[in-house]
Amino acid sequence: MATASFQLAGVHLKNRVFVASGTYGYGDDCAEIADVSKLGGIFTKSLSMKPRAGNPPVRIVETTGGMLNSIGLANIGVHRFIQEKLPFLHRVDTAVFANIAASTFDEYAEVLTILEGREEIDGFEINVSCPNVREGGLTFGTSVPAVAEITRRLRSLTKKPLLIKLTPNVTHIAEFARAAEGEGADGVSVINTLIGMAIDIRTRKPVLSTVTGGLSGPAIKPVALAKVYETARAVKIPVFGIGGIVNARDAIEFLLAGATAVQVGTANFIDPSAAMKVAEGIVQFCDENRIADVGSLVGALDAKTGVSVLDSWL
Image (cartoon, rainbow, N blue to C red; front, top):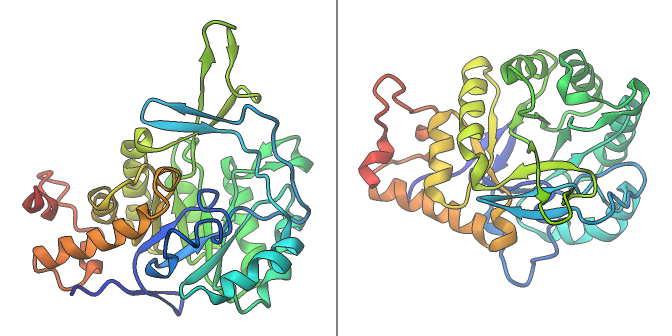
């Protein structure tokens, strides 16, 4: 059987498939129907200092090939997370990455500091697609200096793996990845959702209460692949590929484009065991093609001819 494990900043991860933040709750919602121990790890639902109710409905709508969401980073807050969710996560035989979302630099630092000493937490993923309330609503993730500042401040607070989750809603995502790398990030997650909207033609009103929301699912996969390819060529730190992955073939495409690992997101709403099937499918592909280590697929795209090892599986 092909080797699936790898190391991230000294943390052993059993394979290269994870569930994306916001798509699997805090890991306990599907405990009776899916075995998360078969994954490389869990990225928790975003955590802020205080509980957040999120946006009013309608805040989810299906679209062609995907879905729009405007949840508004609803979460139970870091203290309730520790009391109510960490006991379960402590029993799970896989890595746990806490996703942090905040409105100020200080809030990011405060939440991470609270979680830093918890042995149940193996690392952090920082969602920078959040409004900076001190800058009039500017999204952190669309400012290179802001991404650099967040990374620099949080890097000084933890020795655990630190990933920065980047927005695709910028001109050159590589600039943001380089900023994170330059300030000590151990990796970047690429991509977060694209901005989209839906309109009810009968009422002539937006379907989402917030007018626009985040587009995810298979519809964004070509964009996500291109962003991962751009990012992987610009930095030396690991890239976690996200965007429209529903099966092993999708995941392998991301690995070939340069992703060190992948996160399964929207597919979890359709099938809570989707990520486990992806992980198994990657190993099956490698075994059938006599590939000894899944890691050898990372960045193995032959960009000059457009031909890759994946073609042998068709």
